[in-house]
Image: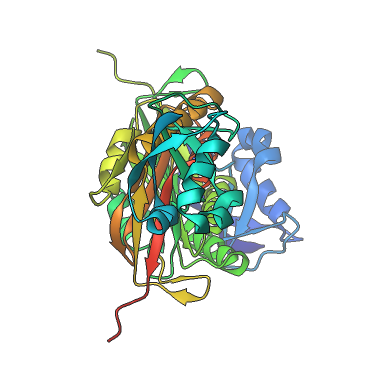
Length: 82
Length: 82
Length: 129
Length: 129
């Protein structure tokens, strides 16, 4: 298990009902594994999976990315600034 | 002969040394004929002919345009605003 | 200059920062809150951001622009918080020796902001009456 | 709004005239006097115009833009007289529901101004010392 900090924004934040959570990620410690940990607690999030982007330490990365303990991660819904 | 008012701008104004002149235009009273009347008085203007545009009553028109007495015409050097 | 800010965006201030003696053309794009979106009436929009990531990305966009065009200055500013119809949400600007570069750089900036910068809007209907 | 003017151009004023509740994007192009042109140092530029024809043409350009894009507002202003380096010579602006239209309309305006509007510049070298 690796502990990461997950931040939530936009509609994902409304769904989760919090700005951040500590997530315990199972092997293989990927973004996908982190998403599984989160979706287990918030099942409606699964419907969002196809449109989310993963940021690790404030950079977009693929969901295959392996996370280190202490990483700041976020599953970002489609941006709509401008 | 038809009398028109010719206005001068930019480098053409510097060459002619005046802002406006009354020009007497011979048959067939075209823009070309007006240019001939002007170039007869200011021969260095001939070198400009290829780059000048004709305006009659504040609209670009071809040099074949037949002028009416009293028209306001101008042989405009390449514009350089902006 | 890039920023995510809660304060109203002052375009005159942006402009003062964008011109130099070597600048011949400046292009400024201003995004404002429109009274309709996809057929629905809009009264206000709340913008939220992943602020440090948004500013990191804006800095990266600025540096991509500087690599690609000979710009003198680039500005990317996005406001967050609750904005009413007519208020400015975003400004991108580029000053360059020639106008083509200024237009291209400014357009690139806003397109990249809209595609990638982690900012979200939530629309609210006008208050009746 | 179109104008040929001897007065300094106030961009904040242009901006106030260009946005409406239906405007989502505004693009503003600002042309300024650059300190060099084709390798020569420039200290100031004198702009002259065939004023009534220039304003007629600007009005025509505005109407071409309105025929072609769903713009809310178009501004074309050119200053004449003696301008120093850094001063604003021309501003074109377009406000439209969406940004693509605003960019295209604003770019079209300045390209048409540069191609056809009867305005001329005469450059002066910087005063030594």
